Picture 1 (cartoon, rainbow, N blue to C red):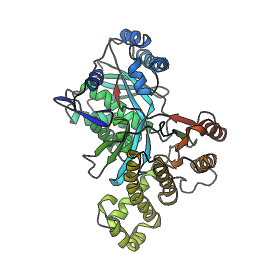
Picture 2 (picture 1 turned 60 degrees about the vertical axis):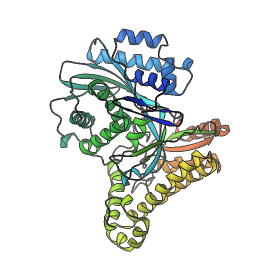
Picture 3 (picture 1 turned 120 degrees about the vertical axis):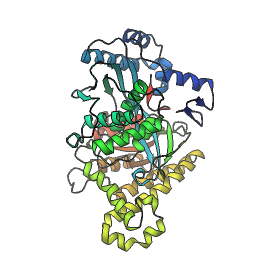
Picture 4 (picture 1 turned 45 degrees about the horizontal axis):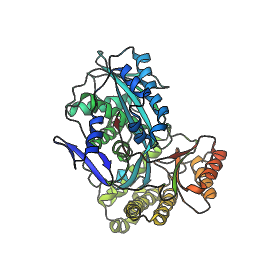
Length: 460
């Protein structure tokens, strides 16, 4: 799937449609086979892939030397870690930014999200070990045997569980897996709310799809495989938004009313033309050890839905929820009820945000972003983990950003919340002062100015 203008292109067995020569060129590049490592390095240093890299990283072709060097470095890492290989493939999966719909996805709601121009990249090459061997830069080597793909309770919350789960899912779809060595490097901050976990899952999915599937699965299926591996093998009850935004790319709105068949639509918008810069603010608090906080949100929302006769809140009309409110409070508690209020309101806000962006009504869009942020803090309560007193990094980040913006732009908790990042839309004329002010408070390098990447998971 790729975006061209306002048209969403899909591929089936007959090819890509609607047909367009540039779409065909991009897709042929995506289907490129592995090639020798010396050839890759020569092409990267010679600027052969400059146009492709410029598209992925939202810059001019003349500014892609540093990105080309990253890909050359993962090729070096592959051989240093695993020894010489005759050929290799190069792959990328972006981080994502959630623009609208905070925690609505796991309740089968609507979201607005986009991929951004920071990513995980990898070099992958065949091995004769019957194993998937993955070396992520700065982490321990992870190895799984490809003839043993059953879920393991003792592997939950580990990289091995995600790898085993994704391999199992691709095997179920007809992949004939053989040994593969993978070396990964990332500039997506771990635990930052830009979803390094989804980028990792999508990256592995793109690699397995390219290397082992005779009939390639779609970016949507790659996202679903990542979510399934995280739910079933890793043990985290995440929604599908993070993986979908990373896999599909660009700015999209997704309706999860039918999770098996989510409705994905592009939303053509250029924030820079509206005089807005997208900033992701790293609060300095990590997501580690907060799984229970995240898991409580979908669990409590499902409990409310069950009282009202549904499985998730999308199954329950808002009027039914209101009528059942006393019973919901008795059985589920007030926090669960407040979280349900947020889900209903934020689900409706997404549709309004999409309409505002399509009408170039950025004042309304920013107002809705701010409303979502207030609702997340007051009702969803995913800014400060339960019991935290001295350490409230996300709350301080939001307060500082609002102060520096002085009523302009918009600020909201980003992604899962509790730790990680805050999102800010900043008028470009205020960007330099805003960035300097936030980094004076949070630390150097903690205000990331990002662009929306026009493509999701990619084969170079």
